[in-house]
Figure 1 (cartoon, rainbow, N blue to C red):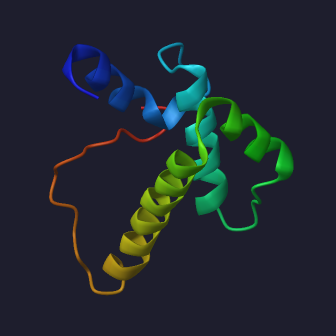
Figure 2 (cartoon, rainbow, N blue to C red):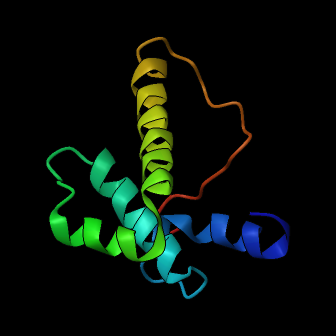
Length: 95
């Protein structure tokens, strides 16, 4: 994501469901990422079918790896008190 559109999307990522900026592919990718990340949520066959409408198998594997890596980092950094470096500021929901 580059330019003004990318910046606008970053500002609205916390409320991506309500935003009109995201494409159908971006929406399903964000849904997938949330379900991978939030404890107790599952990636069901219906969501996987939606992913396949927008991404091929290699892209789904790459997306899965990227989300898993970010989840790993969040679990790794917190107990070691590794603070955010300010490279990506995501506003809190409702801000």
